[in-house]
Image (tube, rainbow, N blue to C red; front, side):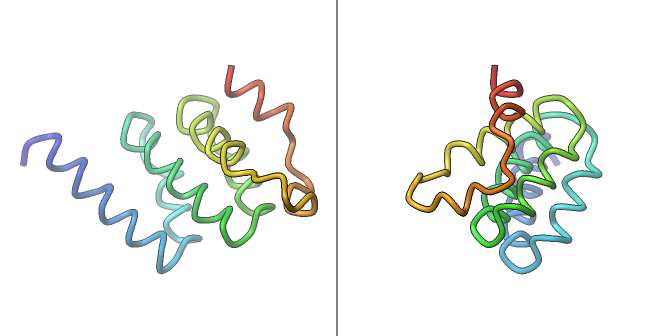
Length: 102
């Protein structure tokens, strides 16, 4: 299978998995070797976790090893803050996100 087709298939599977079991998908994505696939999947997982549990999403993203996957996940969390619910941001360390995003 060509590399792009393999990556697209895995992204599709992880995307569906995040919808049905975000915690298991998050564990899987965290275990992937660093690279483009993990980077993109981490962003998708962070968004899904954030939709249901902001604190869990933040904790998961911060446990990722330093690198693009962590940066993408934290960036995704920052971009999805709507500012309408100050309580939703409780525990979110903006300094960490800002450091990762620069």
